[in-house]
Length: 144
Image 1: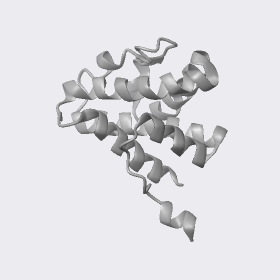
Image 2: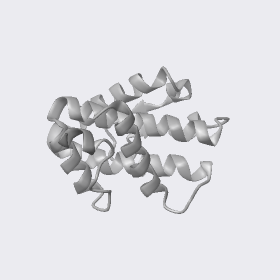
Image 3: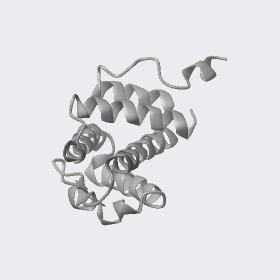
Image 4: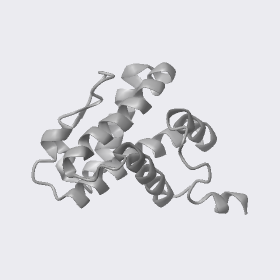
């Protein structure tokens, strides 16, 4: 799948974590929950340090487009995988913050696909989010 499809999937997953809350105040908590859930599972596969490395790389890739993430650090703490997230969103417009966090999650997903493949990554995501849509964006291109 292309990067756009990973963004679409990340947007769906982050929206699932947001639930019916739409305020900027709820956004960091939703992103934290998404990364907590994914990192808990990844820590079993690649250790906490491995997960931290993947999240750190995703942060690095995302900061170019969304510099407000410069103060965010990946940690090995399973309860706080993104240290400094709340503080980094201080004066950021909600839509811009949302897109930055979507890209951050999309970059993490793309890294997983690079290392373990698309099929395994999608199965892991389905383990973390059992209610995620089974028909993934861009899947019609894979079948052609």
